[in-house]
Length: 494
Image 1 (tube, rainbow, N blue to C red):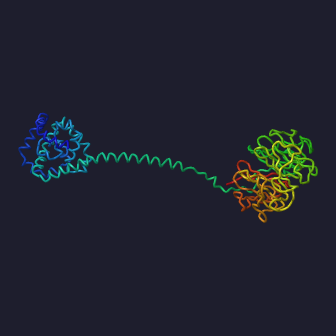
Image 2: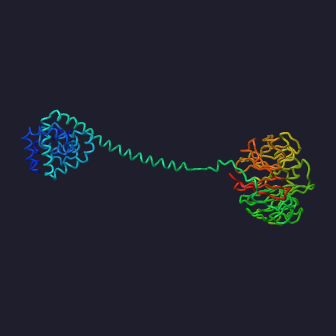
Image 3: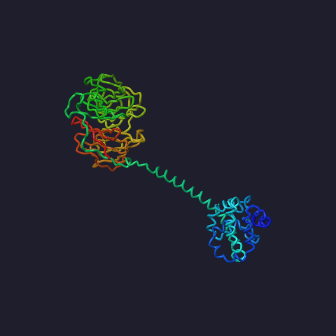
């Protein structure tokens, strides 16, 4: 609309334009004088649309008749200099090629400016465009669509910013693409090992003990229980040698850390080491003295042979319902508060002795009622115990009942049978491993029950006299074969 008011001004400004390009004035007059000449090249005019775009800016300087063409306002070279934005948009607009005009505005913008300092060039093109005004005069019909095109061009000119806007959108898409890559990199988390079912090489990779009974540092005399601490040290209850042997990781030579002073009843001695449990502070040992009574001895963690122990449970006596006496005890569990749980194989029960208990303290019945039987409240020769991951129940290897019992740790309520005969046959040990599966040791094999379910299968067989099981931090499996005087390690494979 600004350009529409300008054409009247150009009629007075062609004179100003005349002062700048003298040659242009002369030729403009020539073009004015020869309107009919322009009739000759109408065909030429369409073939030069690009020139026409530049020239229409110049040619509009002359004819007031092009006032009807919004582009005419652009045609005042003198005026177009102060109004390049308006004239630029419209100078490209008169172009009869809207699509080309879209790409030309930038060029057209530069050309009005160029036409001012370069009148000679402008003159040459003005001469060419001289035919154009004539065309617009001779071909009003063509001239008429041009204003219409001019209007369209203004819209097209407006579309340019829109196109320009589309490009930022395009550039926005690229960040989105770059966002996809982080997503790809995030998806590169491959915890493949967590899906491993787990198995063990059936051939033992390491043997502790020579396979012959003896009392050397690399020998046993009935290894009946084993334990692995958080540093992967292996502890073995060497029953008839009355000692606890400690093996550093992968070493087959042991150090005696409890007992080892000859079988006896002194505080620095063990008669028959049966069960062993180790935490960061203590080494707990059940010391069986058949016919006399069993005691639970607590040694400091850094104990060595000859170190004195503290008795935390046990009194004179071996058989009976009184909870201060303990019969054969082949397995221990100690919780984080140092409460001691022991399986009383002889008296068919599980007893708890709270932290701070001493010799002669009475225990609390957790499972069994001191009667050897097979009801849900009874046990028959319980041999081992292990807690569940939530520390709410115990899994108990109920040896003579051929079953695994699940009993509340609180001691309240009846036990339930997880699995029994014929799947289970005289279980000696039970262990809930770090993989969340329950493992049961029988004389010749190890059974696995995934997630402590009732359905299991053998993961290791061809054993002989297997009595205890333990796992290190890499899930390598250790089996004590007490009749073979050795402990075997089976390497974990996925």
